[in-house]
Image (cartoon, rainbow, N blue to C red; front, side):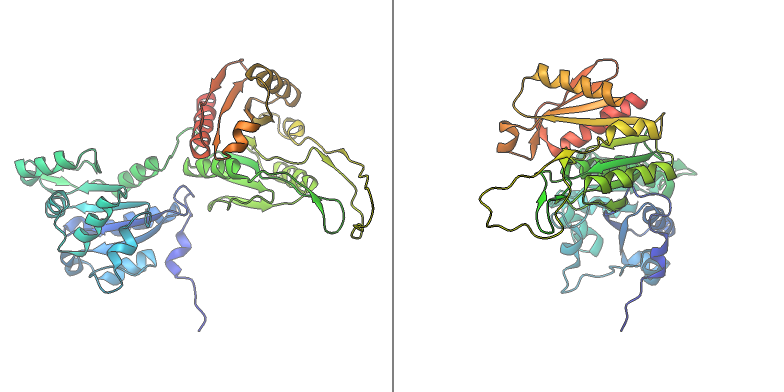
Length: 411
């Protein structure tokens, strides 16, 4: 039987891609505000999230579980079975975030005291122990919210989970509106008012320049830094186009990915995209070949005592960016090996001048880097001459550092 896509999934990423690839668990506790959870689920999906609902018994008396399945396209958890739903949803690294909306006094008390006698409380107990991030949007009568026991539970959990404060209206501590919860979640995953809505072009990965029908010239670039930067920009709310050479890192969901192999293909893809769309930022983090050759049309025989290959200089893509779009914010990369900090920065400044870049990310990929390729140290040089040192960090932290430097320059 042919499987068809659930119609509810048609809305996924219709408003943005900030939550693409994120698995969210939405725990819907027994409150009359439960009907708003359907709207929240849909909002999260519109920004790319995969949402699974866990509904309390009280909620199922208010809203039929099929409604939540219709809203999310996923099965709704109303009881725990031999499938171990609480483990598959909340165990270590199985989900990116658990949202309790609405969050009742009963659910809060069970979480604070380790009671797990319902599907929701058991999911929360597992998630709490696995350090899965938890966000609770409180909703209850005002007198309950001001109860000393409730205050004690909130105090105990503060710093361990996040709370979205209720709106005190008409004698009730009403749950925050779905849009407010969405904004909280987007910020949690890195949404940026500076980068949101920006069109960003990123190049990443190596290129492979053919020598003959079998052999190629390439380098050791994995594409990891560029892919992580693409993920950061997507989380920020930007619209990312990734021109990606044959790297080993999987490209992120939410980006328009254009796969290429050679530097000419990368250059052609960049030109095509920039002629067809206005970009705000270009980040050229790829490591394309500096030299290429005209390939032989058959496999070169391996019985020759020596072989001479004539190389010619490949185009420098970065030198053409400002010619294609004058007002774009251009970020280039400069990698050298085993030189002094002063020499590295001098070469970065020279590249900035030659390419008319607004920012250069300089790093040394020599002996120290080769010992641990996941660790790096970069220097960010801007047009004013300011140098910002990242310190030695892993590549994920480096990507966040670079993003922050770009945000500062655009503020």
